[in-house]
Each structure stands twice: as C-alpha cells, then as structure tokens.
Length: 255
Image (cartoon, rainbow, N blue to C red; front, side):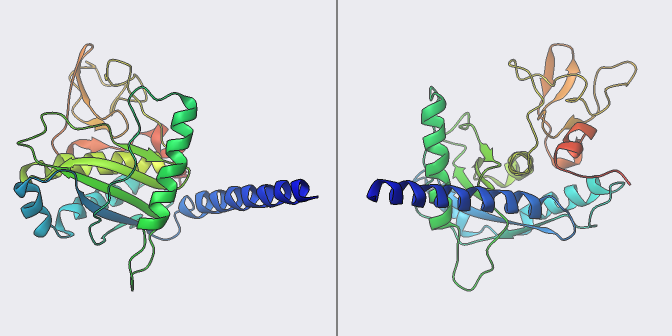
C-alpha cells in the first residue's frame, strides 16, 4: 500500500515538473511581451579587483543585450523589445560545477542540482521573479587567462556565465550572456569540434562571395570566420547577428 502511495506521489511530482517546464517553454517563446531576464552577479574569486568591479556594477553594461535583441528581432513578428535585462543583488554562493569529464548520469544530476540552486537563489524580496535566471560568475583577468565553459539550460530556464571583471571586457561578456540566454530558449550551438563556425547556419552571410572573411559572427557560432580554418572572436554584440536557423529555433516567426 505504502509503495503504491510513494509511486503515485512521485508520478504526481514528475507530472508537475513536466507541466511547469512545458508552460515555461510556451510562455517564454510566444514573444508577445518582453522576456524578463535576471542577472545575478557572483564573485568567482577573492581578488580585490573583482570585488571592486562588482561594487560598481550597474545595469548599464547590459543594455547592449537589450538593444541587440531589439535590432535582430526586426523583420520578425515579435514584440519590438523582446528582452529586458534586470540586474539582481549579487549572490555569495556559487552554482554547482559540472566536471569536464562528466557522463550522461553525472550531467543529469548536475542539471537537477543547478535547477535546485536556481530555485533557492533566484528570488529577491520585493523584486519580481524573472522568466530566465542567469548567474554570472566574475573572474579577475589577472588570475584567469581562460574562463571556464559557460552553460545555458532550456530545462529550468537557467544559465551560468563566466565573465571577466573588467570594463574593457564588457562587450565580450555581453556576447556570452546573449549566447547562453539563447540556449535557454532552445537555440543550439553552430560551431564544429574545432570551434569553427559551421557552414551554412553558423555564418552570418553564408552566400557571401567571396565567402571569407565573414564581416559578422552568428551568435550561436560565437566566432567570425576569416578563412576556412580560422575564426576570431567579436568584441561586441555590434559584430554579431541572429541567423535564420537560430531565429527558427527560438520561435521568431517570419512576418
């Protein structure tokens, strides 16, 4: 009897989780109103430079993300301001880390742990809860030559971004945030195992003649192809576009 009750309760919980995920996906992809995105800064190290940067951080560096999505959405049947970025209070506890060698089971457990972390750390008294939560871990450029891999989860509408605590890197930080934000909405990566843009969907102008160098980068490719075997990182979102394949994946319907 108790076993049947436990199984029934488990099925009800799983049904509730699945229903919530389905509703979240539906409401975040109808594009009838601005998508509210909450950014939660976190100090990833104890460096004084990181602390000083976070002490002066405000919403200004992230307006470029809003402007990027507004510009790229023109020509599609979506709201004129598809994304609103809001800066939430910093968090002292970092999200769980996915090991580089994690297999499918470990990855699934990490995904659940991250969603639990987001649920516990994604609210702020007196503030409206965002549709999507992105936790931004800031690193001192004096300590980190290369940043850990950032991730965005469609299930749970949550992202973890690693960024530099440096005013000169804010344009690059915005690109990573926009990239992971699109992952939460169902967009897929468009680069090869060698981190080169995948033709044609990873190219801003796949039919360009001559094909190289590409003048812009596709947001989910992350790099701009300058030759068949070389690509460079853009400096700001002004050098990036949302290509047709990505627009389709996030349900931007053509007019």
